[in-house]
Length: 144
Image 1 (spheres, rainbow, N blue to C red):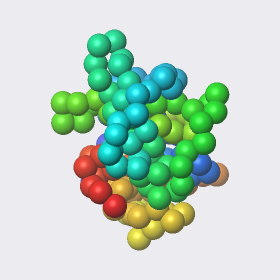
Image 2: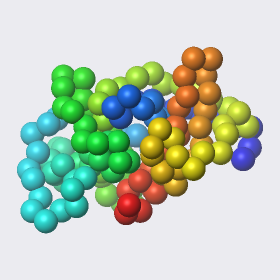
Image 3: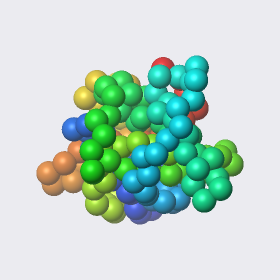
C-alpha cells in the first residue's frame, strides 16, 4: 500500500464503526419505502426506486453477521455504484468523514468484533476509535 491519503465516509453498523472510501459513495439518503423481493437472500431488505434507478438495499448488519439493523430516524442508505449497478447499504447511522494515511492502515484481524476479516481492507486507529475499512466489492459479491 502506498502512503496516499484515504478519505472515508464512516458509519455505524450496530455498535461497530466502519468506513469506506468516499469515492465509492454515490449518495446517502433516508428513503425507507422499499419493495420486498421474494426469495432474495435474508440480508436483502428490498428494492427502491431512486429517480428511476432501481436500487437493491442490503442490511449491512445482517450481511456482516452483526444482526439485523434496527431502523430508526438515524438509519441511512449509503448508495454505492458497483459493477454498473446501484446498491444501497442500510446502516444504523452516519458518522464523520475521516482522513487516513494508507501507511497507517493495519491489516484486518481474522475477525473484528465478530465480523469476518474478509469483508475488510484493514483497520485504522484514530486516537479514540477503531474503524474497520470495508471492502465494498467483497461485501457485495461474496456470500457468507
